[in-house]
Length: 460
Image (cartoon, rainbow, N blue to C red; front, side, top):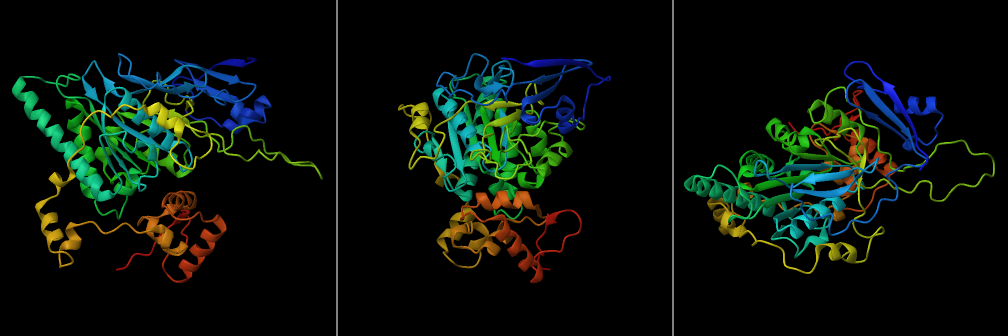
């Protein structure tokens, strides 16, 4: 491969901010994705110019990639320079399970990455209890491949209660044995709770937000030392979408945090919340890699494929050894959607039974919830039992907009992502803007104040 490489001397402390577009203009490279900037050790940086983006055309994921090595890692993909991208499920030096988070916008490849982690757990004898909060649609092939699979917020709470109870049981048992930490498979297996679409459970207005944040926080704080880990996948890195808990975000800083394609608002939050060191910058991950914006001459033909999204799986491993180096997961499953379960994903899972036993959810229904259920629709039941999730497929666009907006608002790009993920039909941007204007005229949305946020008007 014909790669041009420039070794740069940098100021003390390295280059914290740089303009990628200006760098490409200086190098006279139209395709921004061909230029890779990486801060080196000490006072050095490297700029490489590739013939095409080096992360295009990655190979398919194999079963061997998704089996834990002796250091508790799986290989999810590769960095731009060919170095392996590892994700740690277990630290044999400390005996700790991990705390993990996967963030990314709609269509960035989050669900396929979660599939890879689930497959790795099954094929590494790790017990998984999964909440797929997009009604089971995010990772449908996981049905029958994990010990427990739930698809509603209330079931997710019961599952998390069960995981915390298991962690507490292990703590008491290990203390009696004189054991200070977790030893894998002696006798307890490594175990994970995985919550996909966790923003639905933790965002403002979610019915179980406070308890969910507390339970996840407890697993991250005490579960890891007894072999009970927690991984969440969410559509944004906003603090408000993770239970509003500084403690929760603080725990994730020391876990395995992966960022796929993001929005500008998400990047600001990652810096302000401390998941990315202040002053650091990441090279943007475009929707379309290799696209060059140019003026077209009269009658010049347009390439029909030039606007096809092709950056799914490109990411940064923010808590890895190379947090600002772009990487990509290997291909997981079929390129195009399949009419049913993806046969390539099922083949990676294998035919063997998943390890572990399902959590008995009924065991973790509280006395108050049992009483409310017995009273049916009598007063008090609504406070103990969950309200049914709204069906976006039966809602108008205006109702869906109001349903997904948190109290402090969203930027338009994040609102579009939330509407893409609520289970309803796809809404064109023009229709969303028309509905926003109508809702403002009706006094249901606040007028713009210069922040760019779309904010609901809450009742007094």
